[in-house]
Length: 134
Image 1 (tube, rainbow, N blue to C red):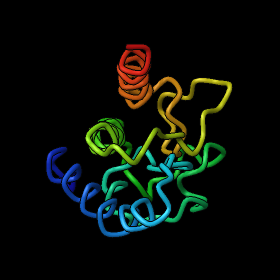
Image 2: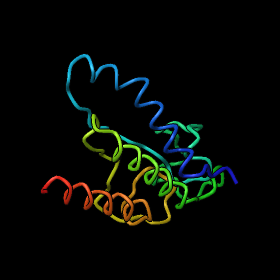
Image 3: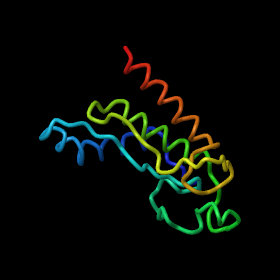
Image 4: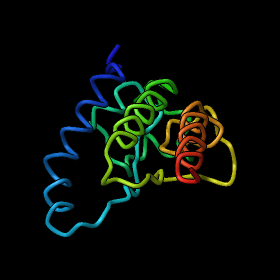
């Protein structure tokens, strides 16, 4: 199994934020919003080994055997990313790369609709909304 631990992924996200974004924030005083976070629903998808346009992760190629479906790895990745964002004051939010109109819960692509990752993102959005209204 190539699934990284959520805590390890969160620490890695935080390290990248601090190395790449924090200096820019400190210089200009502007916050960031992470746009186009893209993690396919495959085993190893959080390792960055697939291109976002890899045809074997696309919805129209659902029956390829190149990758193994792994919905929980995608959900864990979003959990780790949003945990890191929640503790980073200079990042204000996140947009997933794709959110198709149809739920395709068994697709290997980056879409989160109808998958466990959607529930993770929704739960964090609710927490952020409650925090912002206080």
